[in-house]
Amino acid sequence: MIPSISSSIIALEGKGIANSGNSCYMAATIQGLLQVSEINKKICEADVQALGDLAPFQFLKLTLSPLFGTMEPKRALTTSETEEIRTFFRNNGWQPKNPYNQIEDPANFLRFFLSLSQQPTFAVSPRLHKKALNHDYLLSIPARTLNHPTSLQDLVTTYRLSPETIPELLPVVIDGRTMEGMSKNREKIFPSQQLTMSLQGDKEEHVLYDLSAVIVYLGGERTGGHYLTYVPEEDAWVEYNDSSVTRYVQSKSVEETIEEHSYIYFYSRV
Image 1 (cartoon, rainbow, N blue to C red):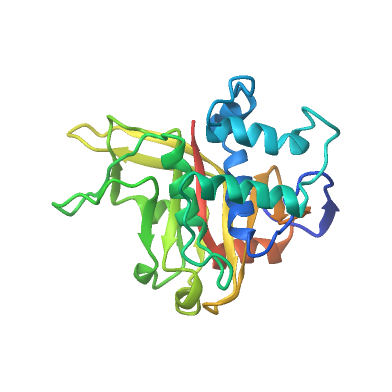
Image 2: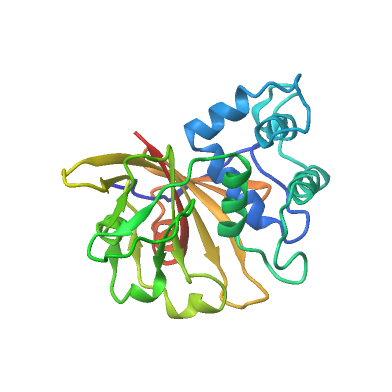
């Protein structure tokens, strides 16, 4: 069961990432990645003494250190620090399709981050189709297939992971549920606290994943909208909305927001 969401609201200080101008896609993605234990571990254990060209985990350990309180008192990131992160990724090959005039897509940024971090690719293929999908870092579910309320578990039952490249992080994106497609694809998706993924092959083998975070998209216009991240806790959700971080306990409105506007799910291998 997914946590039941909140009438109690608690502001959490020192955990946010300020918006430096159309940067919510990046902040939402980073907050989601930080909830994945394997990613968090790589950041915390990165050797910042051997800087070299600064691998992304080394760089993030330095720039995100205020969130962890490892090098100074814990605090949220400022707009200039957020822009420093965006500049780093641009200098390393990130090319936003809509740099400033339009909001960027966190799915594209997540793909770039995982490629830069050398996260192993994995093949996902529909069980009932002969042709496998292209290798990708994300499992994409077409939003056009949504015609009634459903659970995320039901949506992934026809997909299988390659046993040779089982990822520690399994991002699931509802493709086409943002921007201009958002208004047509608002059927509810009920997130699963634990996801069961089948493996390719003759044997019926499975891998379990726990939900770490969900990115939602609020908007509908091509030139507008906003991304934020929700993280499940026991009987609560924590909302990461740029520099604002809030814990909601048993909030029906938050639960409905996630069901109707979820875009990317971050699942960690059990």
